[in-house]
Length: 125
Image 1 (cartoon, rainbow, N blue to C red):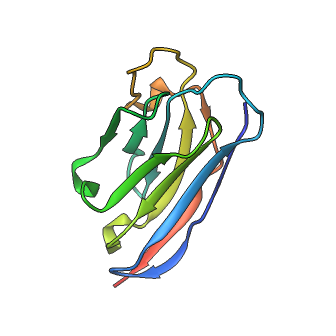
Image 2: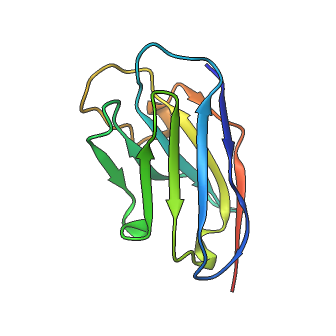
Image 3: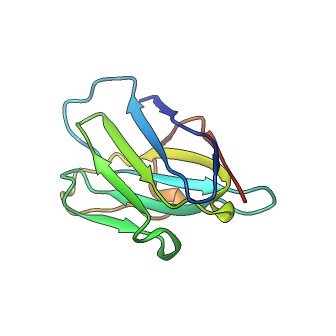
């Protein structure tokens, strides 16, 4: 499975961006998907993830109320990012966990089986 992420860019603080992540291979079933980010000099951190059904979602505390993850289809997940802050600046990676438990939400890097190449998000102050 290959993942393609897009939607990153440069935006001023308070602005919005929408990231998308699509699997290049059509899958017959949905799998949990999520987003991580890595800022320069920092470890990769969990941002948000959605279960295979789309009904279970988790966010890191710092993005709650600002970011929304949306399971658009079997193969596409969006991350709507509003009220962006300079500390959101990072390379954002989408991942897919090949698990079929309906309520399962991966939150650790090791939970994911496939990763996209990353998309840069830069928020200026």
